[in-house]
Image 1: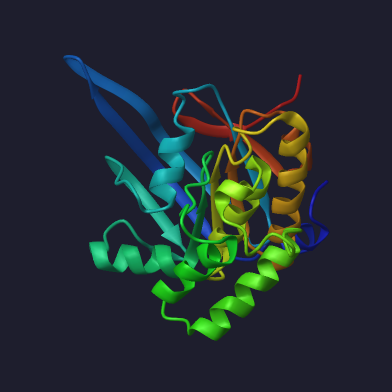
Image 2: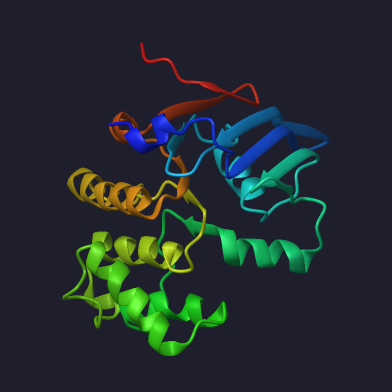
Length: 239
């Protein structure tokens, strides 16, 4: 199901623009070329699916887009600003302000409640405790966790823990969400439910979302689906 708001505004500036991205790694005595000139744009409120076999470069692209890893060559523009040439502190600041990350494993702080896990990133970003708790409560309620927000991760199901991780990623109002197999560790029924919650939150918050997944069933809900092929990003064509 595509996003009508996005479709009406597809001429606006993308939140993420990747241009001519190259990334290779040492492999034995040679080089393993993963990305060979990848280009991609992601717009506000748009959900873009990224597919491809393991090792094709999906995670590498997400790490570069999230300013977690420097490519060998290429440019990454976030909100129109070329970001790879910035200092470490400047890139960290952009990640805190503009980028939310969701991984296959939730990485919640096990000694804290769901509410605390969503509050803590906001405190680090400088928000006051009362405002942070109010925002965390709002997001967890949107993720259907109103009755679970005072539970610790060990008291929650895998799907509930991943919902908390999604709320945490959105807590500082990022403009872009990068998700790497966000439902890959869940059974099919839970995966569909968690992804529906993720999709609803992306739409409500008008976030630009790039989601790497192996689950082809989920791609039906994306605005666009791209695939990594021979180190490039190309439109996916269903057979």
